[in-house]
Length: 198
Image (cartoon, rainbow, N blue to C red; front, side, top):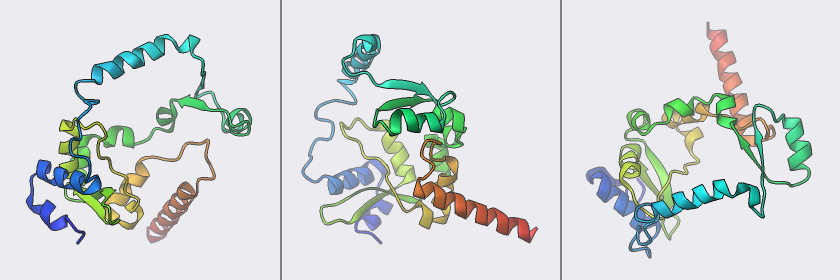
């Protein structure tokens, strides 16, 4: 078991996440000191609103394209080859990712209740993990300026978590993504094996 695993099995969600936060950033004593997620949330909403209103007069204009009208070839020619930034809207909708409807806190908690996901590393490089049940409680209640988040790269190695990888695809603009190619190959292999059994 990892360092804090035994402790977290016996703790409530708040104690478990406080232990994870303490391990991940031991020098940070007050995670909500600046109030970014609470008392200053209105500041950020006002800033976003102002940015939307002043988009036309902005000094730094970033192109916006729709995934429904921007082809991969046009993306490469117009943006990738010229190293020009672009914001592509509608990628998730066009790809019809199952993650959009499946990745709700309730569903994730139900499907992965006691599966432990990586949320950080301590100063010695040990992985810090929390259960999905505790993490979903945390995201419902957290007011941290810099919240913990899941960035677990071991999904491929875990049968139960592996199905998360089937809920999205790498956008069509990046066809040479090695992770996607590997996943597509494995998926096709599994489908072929399943068809042979039938």
